[in-house]
Every structure is written in C-alpha cells, then in structure tokens.
Image (cartoon, rainbow, N blue to C red; front, side, top):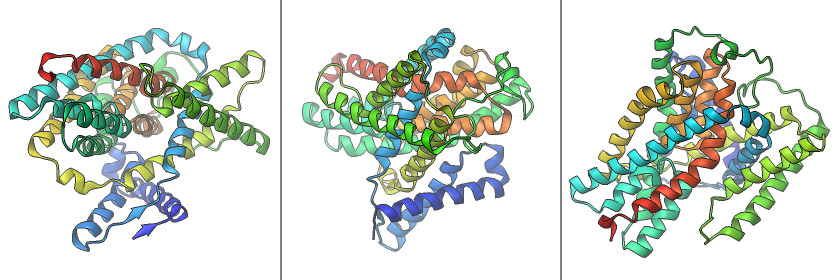
Length: 404
C-alpha cells in the first residue's frame, strides 16, 4: 500500500496526536519522560510491522518531506546560534565535546572487539559503532557503501541502516529513564527553574526548550524566517555539493546549519536580529514532524533480520551508552541539573540523532524545568562538531592493521 505525500503528512500529524495522548494517559511514559513523537512513532512502526508480518502487506510512505523537515530544523538551530552566547558557554562546550569524542572511540573499540570475538569482519564492529550510532542513517549508509566498494563487505549498507534504526529507537527511549535516575542523585524537585540549574536567572526560555509554548509572532516575522530557512537550505545544499568527494565533505544538514549560523550572526551585526519566536515555532514543528515520520517509517523487520553478532554488539553499545551517560557524562559536566539534561541529550545523539537528543531534552525540561546551558551546547555539538569528529575517528580506525 503506497501512501502519498499528503497522506504521509496526515499520518505523521496523527502520530504526534497519538503520542500526546499516550504520554498523558500512560503514567509510566510520563515517569520515564518518553518524548511524545517517540511514543507515537513507535506505536505506528509496530502497526506497520504487524501488517508486514501477519497481513503480508507493506505500507510504503512517501517520505519526500522528511529530508526538508530535518534540514529546516537544522537551519533553525543555526539561526538560533548566537556566537556571543556560545562564547559564554565555550568552556562547557569544549568539555562536553571531549566527553562526546571519548564515547566515539569507546563505541568503535567495543564494536571491533566484539566483532573479532565472534569471528566476523571487524568492519561490522565499526558499523555497529560510531558509524551508524553517533553517525545516524546518513553517515551509516555513506560508509556502508564505502565498506562494500573498497573493502568488499557485502550487505554493509543494509546492516548500517538496521544499526542506525536500532540506535534511533533506543536513543529516544533511554534519555528519559537515564534522566529520571540522575534526578534522584541531585534531589532537584520538579518545577525547578533554570536559575537553580545554571546559577543564573533567565526569564526568557531558550528557543527549543518549550515546544508547547505559544510563540508570539507576526505574519511578517514568520515569512522573514521562512525566507532565511529557504536561503539556508539552498546555499547549504549548494555548499554540500561543492565539497562532496573532498576531505572536507560533510552531510548536507551540517552545511545548512553552518549557513544558518552565518546568516543569524551577520544580521545581528547590522542590527537586524532574527525573530526568535518565529524560529522556535518553525523549528519545533519541523522537529516534531520529522521525528514522527522517521519513526513511523522504520522497517522493524530489518532489526529482526540482524545476525546474532551484530545484535549483540548493539545490545552492548546500549549498555555502554547508559553506563557512560550516568558515570561519565553526568559527572564530567558537573553532576547538577544541567548535567542531567546534557546526559539525556547525549543518549539521544550518542545512539540516535540530534533531533532525538532535542526531543529527549524537551521531555526532561518540560517536567523538571529549564536548562538553558544544555540547549545552548547540545545542538552545536550534536549537529556540527560530532560529524567532523566522527569522520576523523572512523578514518583513524580504518588505518589500523586489522583492516588491511
């Protein structure tokens, strides 16, 4: 059954509504602060899986809107990135980046070690490491093609996509429970403000912190923001095409984010700052719809087809992420409320993707209070620096003798 683009948009909207209802109606989802798009998206994916397995019917959604929604979300992250604010959060950003890069290395070490223990090609260890987990579907598919063409690893792309699917699901599920566990350590009560978390009173919430808040804006500001997003998409795509195949190659969404940063800060210099409320509104809508589409179109039967060694690697990576977030990320980032939110975000993009990280943090801050520092640091690290660090890490690991 083929569902066309408008039908897909309708289903994605219904998925979000179902997610809202589930989180409101099921206490355990609220207790573990599961993001609404994740709750609804997994239910939709299970229904599609049931139709595939028992009714022998494949539901094929037209996902042509999925990539533009994701890139629009990253454009809003760039448009919201004030370099002056990043300067204030610089030391924290550097420390968080160091924590993130260390996990990339551990993921690959663990993946390679388990692959060799099972007697399979160690390249599967990389696919079940930072290639598909921290890298996501795009990076996984790209490196899977490289592993097949240059290293002769059969079905590498399919394995990479399956690993990334597993990571996207687990990244969205684990952030809330990890945050819930860490909240017990710091003893912070629900409803605490960011002042208690960050030590400074900031009355205005950060753009992505309150996805359900009404954003005061005007048609003019909305249109101006859409124009900036469109410019970011067009120039970012062109920039990505120019550097494709070079040593500086980056995913398109990173280029889009970079253009957004340049636009926002360039306009601020000439006294024409972007309309933050319009950016927040468009960004949160794009994020919610993208996550709904990403999760409802998951091919869960691909996970069922994973060989035992790869599935074991992924299970071990999940355990590593939980332990690392609790004992390393949380402590390294200060063992306070900001560290709790950062740890939830790290679970999201350490296993899944940046949108999952933002959704995790939104679910946590909606329950326990703002964390401006986390929403300042995580989007830039998860959406920009991690792709550069991951590309370097993967290339360094491929230089090891076991891959020659």
